[in-house]
Amino acid sequence: MRMLANVYRLGVKELWSLRRDTAMLVLIAFTFTLSVYSSASSTPPTLNNAPIAIVDEDHSQLSQRIISAFYPPEFKSPVLISHAEVDEGLDKGTYTFVLNIPVNFQRDVLAGRGGEVQLNTDATRMSQAFLGSGYIQQMVMGEIDEFVNRHRSQTTPQIDLEQRAQFNPSLDKSWFDSLSQIVNQITMISIILTGAALIREREHGTIEHLLVMPVTPTEIMLAKIWSSGLVVLVASILSLNLVVRGLLGVPVQGSLTLFFIGVALHLFATTSMGIFMATVARNMPQFGMLVVLTLLPLQMLSGGSSPRESMPELLQNIMLVAPTTHFVELGQSVLFRGAGLEVVWVQLLSLALIGTTLFTLSLLRFRKTIGQMA
Image (cartoon, rainbow, N blue to C red; front, side, top):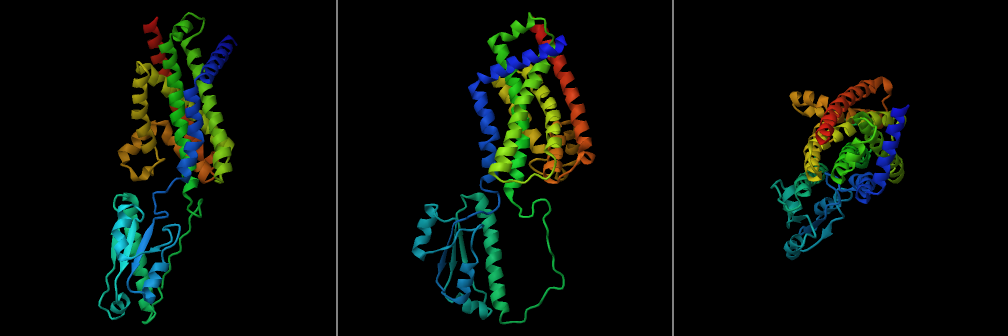
């Protein structure tokens, strides 16, 4: 009972310290609100509302069909301009694409002489320029083929491929990005929060006060873990319900209770990791560098940014020792596919084992650090 009381009081002390840390509170609020919302509602990597202008020198039925093929959301409504306005529009960034349809284009196509169109692209907008050029080529060729086939025999394919998207029928980017952002932010904030708390006490000299009190290193670590974990857990619950489900209107398929049980186990592992990193770093700048070097591989190689199946097999096996790999798999299974305990119990068990291992290593390192200070 005395140990539990010490852990509780030390944890409350950590919460009061966090309350006075304005920068950390702003970081937590921004991470679980604006960061999640902006990630879900930002411009997707696919083509979206690309500005396009068309120089129609042919004024034919075929050119009108090509013009009408461009519409939102891939492209903005096309603007008809003259040839003299092309360079100015591209130089000012008004248009990303300018399509030039020459004179007698329809006549040459119908005569089989192979009409030519010119596509001018603002290549400084790399992602839209690369994707849009392919889109425009396919769309123009599709309109030409359909126009020409009206005058020729049209063959019906014997096999028709019908595609269905499961779990996200409309392929809405915000569904995936908002939930994935919460999963990534839980890892980042939990590591930063616990590590910064320990380094702040060491820099302010309050860690020496704890050494003369009747508390053990285990109690100090447990207090930092439960207080930091509680803050991140509450922030993630509010973010998932208010921002993701409320503001963005993203449906959640599975049990939130099961998901947050996984969050708690993951926080046990990541907060222990944060304490271990804080014992290695001598000051806050060094800790910040360690966080960057640790978070990037954890987030990029755990399956949240790209499927693990596309990575080398050796790398997949190495990342099994990282808690983020199992947490990402658990989060995607529960939130996206509605999986139950019978599916994700392996990930829960893995998180518990990894968390226990990290806690033990962090405790040994923490005791050694305190012994050197004493």
